[in-house]
Image (cartoon, rainbow, N blue to C red; front, side, top):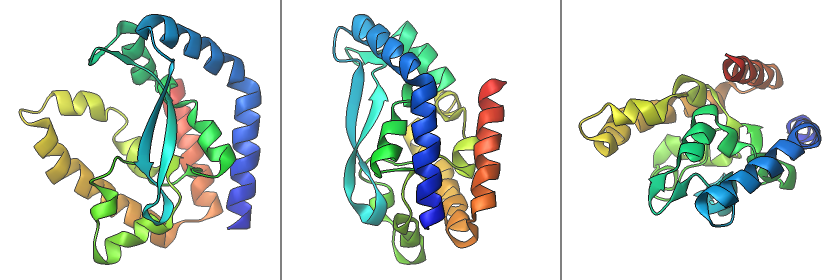
Length: 183
């Protein structure tokens, strides 16, 4: 997996060089918009089930998504600071998206293999559920729908990734993510 780590270092370093200015500008906008630190830090379940601190742009004030925050979420700009998580080694460019406590850390049996992977910025599951937030707003019971439909499907997809991952497969996911973001 040395090749994967080298790719992560190169890709995240290059991305931060290219869009570091955008992250700083958006941090400033988020700070002004929410009247709090524009970076949102949260504990997430990482590799081997260990918690790490994910870095995102703040999108909420007083429990509500702000208009700028809604734009950041829709365009996924709020996730750009996670390139720092990749650079320091908490995350990978491709891998299962990190979740809050109460999901991946509770997996049992074969499904726990997912925890052997570093969480990623993107994955086949995150591509499939690119509009997950919108999808959940369309449900009568969003939490139940997530727990009974979306999360089990993500587990299945991430387990498939665990067994079939490859460098070229990762490149394909990265290219699909870039293409999806540009549409």
